[in-house]
Amino acid sequence: MNFSEVFKQSNQLCKVSPDGKYLATCVQYRLVVRDVSTLQILQLYTCLDQISHMDWSSDSLFILCAMYKRGLVQVWSLEQPDWHCKIDEGSIGLVSSRWSPDGRHILNTTEFHLRVTVWSLCTKAVSYIKYPKACQKGIDFSRDGCYMALAERRDCKDYVSVFVCDDWHLLRHFETETQDLAGLEWSPNGCVLAVWDSCLEYKVLLYSLDGRLLSAYSAYEWSLGVKSVTWSPNSQFLAIGSYDEKVRILNHITWKKITQFEHPSSINNTKAVVYKEVEKRTAVGSDDLSLHITIGTALYNTRSKYEICPSPVQIPVVKPDPDRANPKIGVSSLAFSSDSRYLATKNGGFQVQSLNWHRSGDSLMLLGKEQLCLCYMDTDQEDK
Image (cartoon, rainbow, N blue to C red; front, side):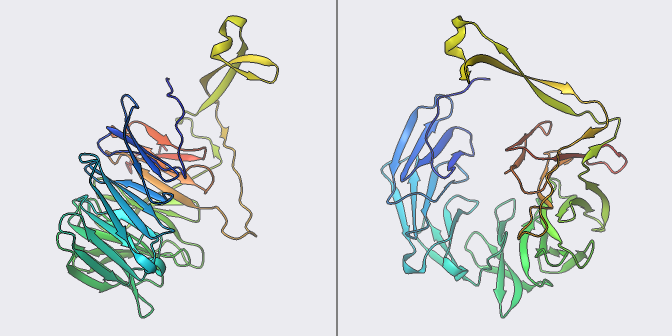
């Protein structure tokens, strides 16, 4: 494995473009764009203040830099370095900024979630959407980029509005049967919208595009409920991660639970193969001093290998303190493989920040260390 030199970055603002050709990093108020293959600097942009958020457009032609403290958004073009755009929200403030799927509109959410402002880079037109709700996931676009679902709060009730992304006109508006709507997500085929309640009530609702309630699911009552929800790429499964440290899978025909998975601290399944990383350090000679690091007073060459652990395997588990506020419990991350056969889940809220499958569906990339569960999406199989 080869490593490049270390590049500076601020606030973990480092993203590869969607086409995989460019790497953008932010250093205070500067935006640096590099070529991924050579790591040479292609463009260097200077913003008006320290960058709080950075995002690529879907076609990798524009970069958005948001400065929340000043309520500013600056947009830069890779094809035309001299072209730039500045959006000033003024005294109303700014708490969130994102691209629309077409990469030509910017959605800004103002302070206190008073409204969402849609800015067009092509026509310079501005559209305003009122009553956005401040929640876990209040905006989601359909996979084809045609529709946007927005969670709203009016007169102490939850609503969902569906907008057409071409001209941002309202297509549907309906009330949801939730006490405190926490998030919504389109199915990949764009036919069903999943809506879930806050953690105080276990409720997942499935709505059609025209606002009809297709089904409602609740696993239990009088306890902390839903923590994460995600669709499989084929839209046939809906995975629900709960605070009881279990994952429940619903099917797309009856919307009933077909199976559930747990996160055991002990693996007794003889069919499961568990690998453990083992580091081996060997002293090196004086000829290799430039290739190694000094640990204490001795020089070591560190090599890693993986050994198969004998069954049963005990997984180290850190139990949260229930007496402290916001205990880090429950399944907080879910990720399907591209072929919808496998599901990776993270139990707890410790060091893993994200779960990402490779496009082939045979490898999983995660950030940090945490307990993982790999599930084979076939109800006839019992292996996990």
